[in-house]
Image 1 (cartoon, rainbow, N blue to C red):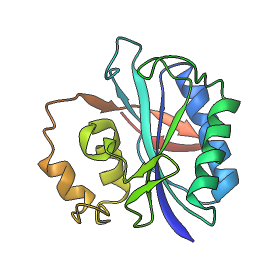
Image 2: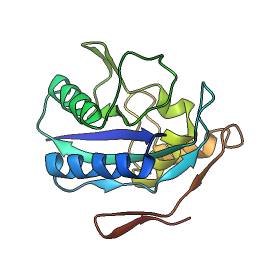
Image 3: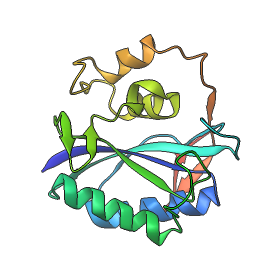
Length: 170
């Protein structure tokens, strides 16, 4: 089993797409670690606010199989791949880490650079995995969040329920 962390985001039909993603991930992996759900402004383009969160799980899938499976989940939720890189998203699921893997495999570069660049990735990751070490930097996510320029990007927790459970409270 390999421990993985995934970043989920949506700014189109946000609640339904995040719920559908969590349903699919729970079916695929079983028990999930789920951060609070945060709302943030679009980064890199003008668009509706995003809902973002991080999910931790364990998998027997290879990195390539995992990537292909996550793309299918995105596609099943209306993801269009022919638009600009920075544009509205029905669902975006990014692999942040795959165990301790550092490097590039099949155009998948890990750990994902967004971990230390975007508050909407780092804060939820630090929330569910505060003592886990970043595989490349060898610092835990709590310390990386404390060192992050938290004024550079605003985000806020929102009320969010999934599968009859309160995941997040504003």
